[in-house]
Image (cartoon, rainbow, N blue to C red; front, side, top):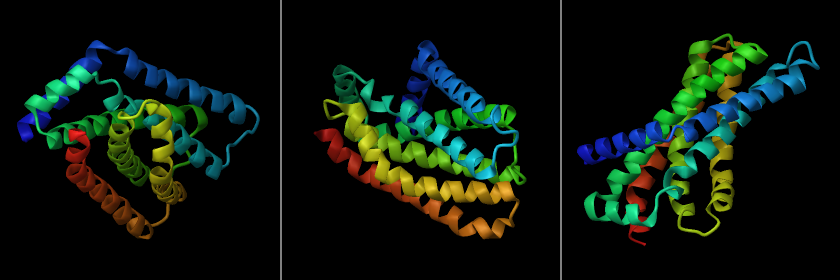
Length: 221
């Protein structure tokens, strides 16, 4: 299983390296969105309010996640999927996709935070907690959206279906992430955020376990 996951993750990174347009497109999306927010808010208001700053950041990160992870299974051709079916286990495939999307989202999220804070200012007082929240959020987005991407890939209009399916799953997670990041911005004691941290970690663990158990049934279809 470990070898299967390792080889599949290496394959995804190799394809991404050869086809740099996908990653560069995500960087362009992040940069252009942040710049539009700068033109819309920072030039109009001298100091952007903290709730607006926090909400804009997670909205940008959410749409970046959907666009980046949507291609996990949608871009795979039927012939390649049949080839995988004959060689590797379905558990190895879903775990490899989750690992790859998690690494991709961590890179995009940290780049987004650095660029966003550089352009719109950085009101965060507890940077360690805020970066930890970004890491947990990237992990949560990647685990949830990877499974949803595999479900949506079975339908004809997969992009629309993924947006519809991801909405009720992502919104509760997004609300807790925004609360955590608000605590980091205000510099509150970290014990105040312990419940949200444990809840998000539990949700991520549950999603990974459910994906590991249920994906083989979806894979056989």
